[in-house]
Length: 350
Image (tube, rainbow, N blue to C red; front, side, top):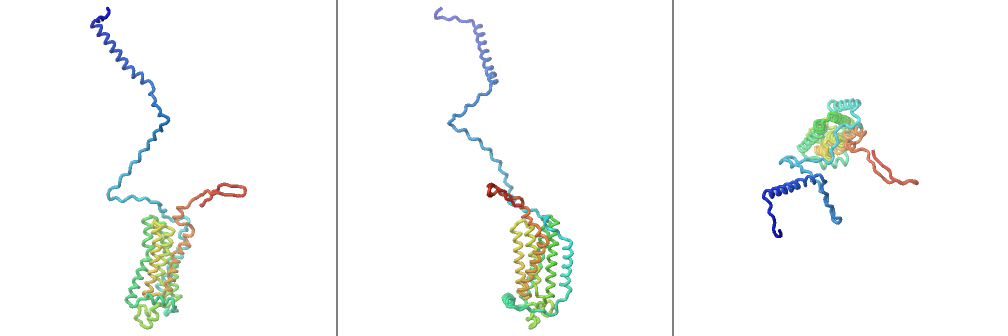
């Protein structure tokens, strides 16, 4: 039997091949099932000499969509302006103020329109200061002086109206504050009543002749006021006084109530009104209606009334709105030392 093999029958060979194939299939199916019950293998740790990979950075937030073409660029306020309201620290217009405003305003209207001015100038008031500036500024011809007078009238009417026709609508319609609008209106009327009463009262008490007084005596056609009682009402300058009153009101109101919402514009309107007051005074001198001392006194009385009356009766009792918004408890840690103690202390402002 050496060197020879017996050949199996064909049927038995096919049976053995089928059994072997079935066993192989069973093993191949069973192997993954057995591995599924086992925990997943751990990843090998990196070698100690290799650094760990850096953590992944979070994805940046999506960019804001660009505004459509032609749309206004968005604005970002760095400091919001305080709410426009009447501070509880400021007294509201009192009953006594209503009465005083009505009495002084009525007396001013009576003195201006119904009481007769002095028939003759009580004093002329010539002095080197007034005469020198008059010689510098007064215009030569009647036409030029009348034109300067018309310019001063425009400045007078426009400047006096600014607190009423500009600030009151802004407070009412822009800031939607009827309360602030009413308080501003009454303070404006009160300051003008005080200034007007002083102005018209001084016309009678002083009775100063206008600068054209001597020229009118030499030439009655020098000025339309020649021979009129109005030529005896030089002190103080009423036009300058009225514009200065409005200037004082604008300065004090915008100092305490930021109606325009910006420190530059709220302060700028005070400077602009001051320029208007100076321009009014100069044109009155150019028109030969007043001496320089008349204009200076009018400016002083007007500004003192416009700024001083609201401040004295209302604003001085509390801080400005912007100061009130920024006020609060501010605490700072500082070192402190005593004979038997060393440490830290708290210093604050309320």
